[in-house]
Each structure stands twice: as C-alpha cells, then as structure tokens.
Amino acid sequence: RETPVHRDAQCPVEWYDLLATVGTYEGAEFELRGVGIRYAYIPGTVVGLSGYLLKHGVSSCVGERVCYAYFMRPKVISRLGILTEGQIQVDKYS
Image (cartoon, rainbow, N blue to C red):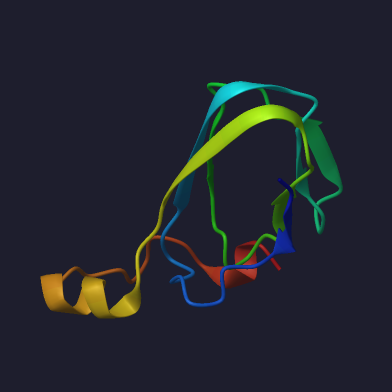
C-alpha cells in the first residue's frame, strides 16, 4: 500500500515524528518532496522528521509492510505540561 505525500498538519512543529518500518517487502521508497530526496525504504528503517514541516510519503511495494508512527498532539503536550519553546524554529527550515 502506498502512503501519499502529505504533511502532518496537526502535529506540533517543535516535535519530531518517528517512523519505523518492518515487514517482508521490497521496492518501497521514502520521499521528502519539498527537499527533493527519495531513498530506499527497506525493512528496519527508522526516520525522524518534522512531519509538519516536511512533506513525506512512501511508494507502494511488493510484500507486507507495517509502519509504526510516533507523533504528538498539542492537547497531549499541554496536558503533560511539557514546554516546547526553543526546540525547533520554523524559520530555520523554510
């Protein structure tokens, strides 16, 4: 199955998303469209990125692929009382 290129609009810009892929598949490619990067997305790959800032997606593949995605939502961060100022600045990535 393909994951279309997208941005994670509800994720805080200050936090990185973590993606980990596992399975018995081949031929998948991970794309960062705005940066112009495309690379082999083999089983066991782990990616850390700002899903809000960087458009990303994965091509279809042959076999079985599972992606574990870790991301935060503003309400969770607020509830936990986590301060996020100063971790990442949007203007450094624009």
